Image (tube, rainbow, N blue to C red; front, side, top):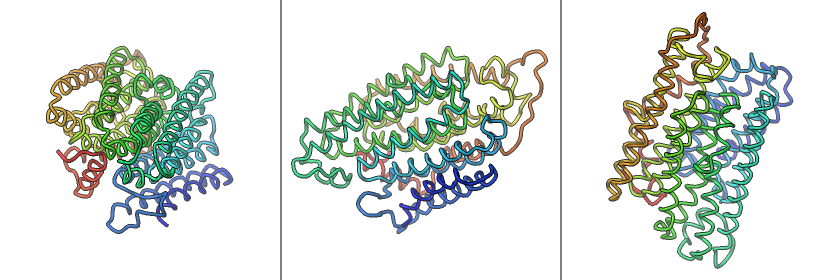
Length: 474
């Protein structure tokens, strides 16, 4: 009953949250569900926890990793939300909290689904549940952003649906879309239809991830959505979309089609790094800077899948590190927006002196998201680069290092100016509150821990996930 509960409890809570009177009751419900969900997700890490519920729901290594990232990010968002709603246009938070809980239910469905159609339904539900939150400010710019988000995401999810149809058509006997059936009978799938299915799934779920050149929705959406929503999208939504692509990779690897999937994965990954490196150098807005950073890290994830071998291990580890780090950075930028009233870098200079806690988080976050030691992203990026060298793709390792160096310069140029720069004349000292800093501190602390120590249960899950993707440990 644990797996259905992880989906049904937040779904029912979303309905209850809409009906409850008063913001306090809704916020209490949000925090309660976030805590229960994290406890349930943690329970799946224990041996014999009941990781199967029928044929359609199961908790394998990849699913548990994504579910844990979603749960940790959601807990940080839940802790952050009370302070956010105090100054928002919708003070009772009825729709806001309802949509948050609906997203948690949908994301949990994606993580636990072992039926490709059910996974698709979960991804479509995540899109719809977040649309109203992107439009939270109810301005013209936010309307344009949510329109672009819905149109491009709908195109992507429609293409993923076509890919799911082709998966069904690729079977000589039956039309089962259960992941276990597709993998166990992968040799019997028709290669031509299977390849068409992968192309559609790659473009469809790649659009949801924000891979370049399919990323056009991401800068505007992240820039206009409240930072707490952008953090949820960058940390949890993109992790779910990656899982959809990873499931397709599992099937293709089992069908001995890795030689076919490697070139498009590497091409989209490198394109994402190139695009993000170019646009970061000229950014003036903190949230849009982080949006392009998300494009970069989505590129690294698919490069890991394309490298294979130890690259699959590095990709799954990077999934965890990036999800937590990116959510932490968006929550920290949310503090900047709340304190300074804008995310423009020129208006937030001198943050370390004006808001020491937030300034320190941003400074440490710079080194975390750019893969600097001792943070976890350094380990995962180093693993990816080492995997490329082992697979006789030294050229790829060199290109990645060069592009990561350019990205570091672009991010450091803006964030160091924000943290250490000279503030505008008469700029006041900003009043900080610890509850709004606790969310990013929690997530950042985990990313720091993963840079110096990988717990044995996590190593086991990473190794199992890498094997499922056709790879292995470093």
